[in-house]
Length: 258
Figure 1: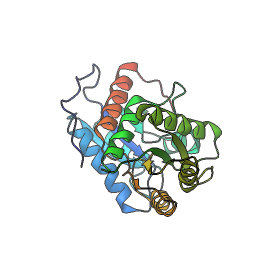
Figure 2: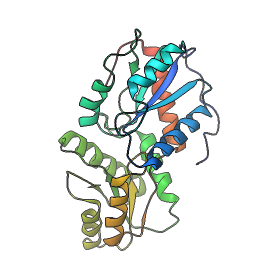
Figure 3: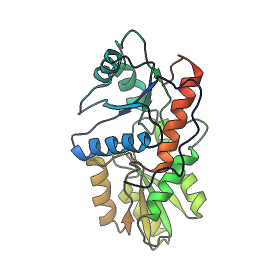
Figure 4: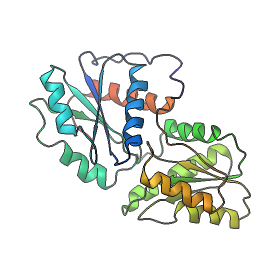
């Protein structure tokens, strides 16, 4: 587990009695669920409230199960922070479906953590750069590797993240997609090498390990990448972003945003 925040963020008004539900995609890989629980633990080190995790697919509890369990133990209101990096299918379809039929007091749902129309959140950019530094290898170009989507806006948001990461490092940087969209991470590595880069690193733009992460690792390594960073996991910048979203939701009232 990475280091936690230097100091707990100042408490926001209106958070007393609220519970935080981290809603992840879920995976058949148990390591993905372990990573989500580690993130919840890291958030708990900076905020001493009730924190639970739930999943959209492949794992339990579901969002409805977690919300009903929180309601039965008297916790409310509940703020749901979706652990999603784009406003693609999972955000537009799976998320609203997962939250149908909630307890008597519907949860407050924050926007997804990535894919903002205002551009990449600087904390996600910083978290990706943190993971790259943990590789302890030199590199002169970067590929930001994401899951991929048929949603063009989602792909553009990943490309915008790649541009932000590259600008911050002063290096060429391309987006790569493990499924559905192109280029793949391996193709992006080869494009950068063909353009003159000698040591290309891959930044894993995902929360947790899983099938697509391993696929990106294997294909990027075969294409000549010098290293592939670990998923965002419990990066302190991600913890700070989640807590900010939580406080904003507590202060904004019951309006839901997906």
